[in-house]
Amino acid sequence: MNINAENLISISEANQNFSKVARLVDEKGTAIILKNNTPRYVLLDFSLLRGENTANDTDVDAIASRILSKHIKAFEELAK
Image 1 (tube, helix red, strand yellow):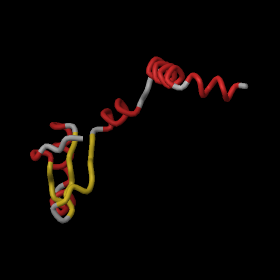
Image 2 (cartoon, one colour; image 1 turned 180 degrees about the horizontal axis):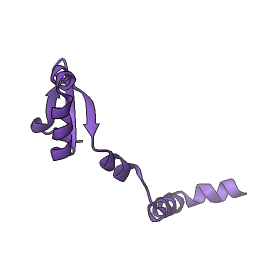
Image 3 (cartoon, helix red, strand yellow; image 1 turned 120 degrees about the vertical axis):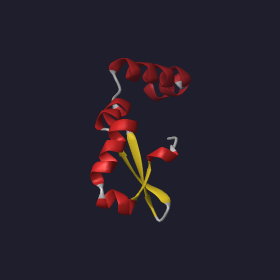
């Protein structure tokens, strides 16, 4: 994940002004919350989370085929 300096916000500011953080997420998609000047938490738009973690059947089939073809000899040996 790339961190954009415009998305950084301190934990104290996030605590005191959550609506500002929510607006930042609405505009940029994510907000990085700093604790002791170190990135600690990520707040992101829920639609981004769903999109990145959802695999369709085609993706799963392609990955399975790639793994199977790469390790076909091992699978054949296991099938005996």
